[in-house]
Image (cartoon, rainbow, N blue to C red; front, side, top):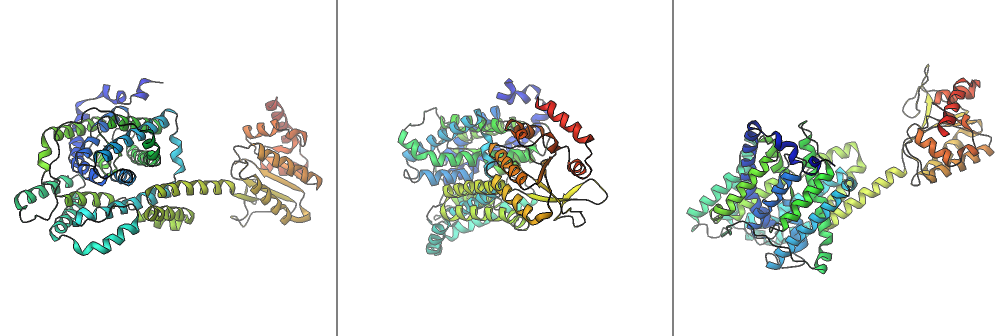
Length: 575
């Protein structure tokens, strides 16, 4: 393995120049400006002191810049992962307590270790079992839950924190009348300013603007706005090195939430990475390397007091739009966070929590994807129901059950689709040698004594019974006039022992009925599997043809020229 594959930073660092640095500097500073208030806000979602959001933005970013295959993905604290952390850890310890913090840091180590192991053993394909409708339903539901959970800080009411929609809504209904006018006014104005600046130019550091305005308002008018909750003191200094507290029983309890974070974090990272990859032609995302980079980011981050991190959709997009070309932009963001931790945390003392809530709410609004649901309703209703069930399961049952429902449904749909693939009866296009689906082409010619069948999938244990049933139905439909069955096997790319034995049994059955059975367009690997399984003991090489036309021609005219040539080829390849 090349050293550049292990350390992707070596792909761009030796060629680095002033032109690249100019774009990286602007992007790094811009992302850093957004990251600092977001880090503080997302730590509050996770139930942690604000300083831990900045810790999460430090070491993980540094490690990803070295090991990540994407040069523009921004790693750090994110809203979805923060809520999952809060949901899982709050059942084991009191929110904000020392024990709670220790568990969140241990969770980061667990998540990182699992991701790293998956990357080393090339297990990135596992994420493919989560289809796009499942991801869309899950992220949309999570966005709604995150937004509703922020009403506590936005309105100044101690609403219950939960990952179940009905629990949140009931509590909001009971306490909504107690909202703070001052807190709500500042928060709503912040939302308006952020959304307005986004419409004007997405590169405007709207989070920084509302943070500065909020701090100034509370610093100079705090006596009048005494009911508005502020962040207060944030400790200064870089995080010290320390090993997470190990506890086997605790690790066992955290495993389900860790697996959820592994899947969600990887999905977030690979999704935004692929999106940014499509906008350039300089580098390529390597899924397994992304798992390794994420794993190392979380593991090393946990050694410096970071909770689980992943890629941020919003910050990654800002990074790319601001001109980031390499991982140097991430290193510049790390430097900004470090400077903030060392010298600037006292400036955030008067920061209103309602401002942080406004930043989070606007950030997650973009994750609610109604457009995809409308599209799927028209294009593929099975995928629409998959999206809807995942969405509702996540909303009403919770995050863990939502992701479990999504994975389970994806597997069920996969099994359903592979066990009932498309099968078509073919007819000849007039004045040609081409054969097409009789249900799609009305003008095709169908011979009463020939059944031509095309199977558009691999033939294996999950669909062999379905194939046999469809074959029997079509032969019965043809009736007594049927003399020849032709299987167009051009679309069959693999066959297992169950499929082979089923075909052998059907061929013997049709032989008893005095029916011929021909194969057309069989691929080499499939043909090899046939012959290894004893096909030539029940039929010979003259039952295999290059195409449907040759099979029909031989049946009609007995012209052996083409067949003999193909039979010789089969014999040579078999030996």
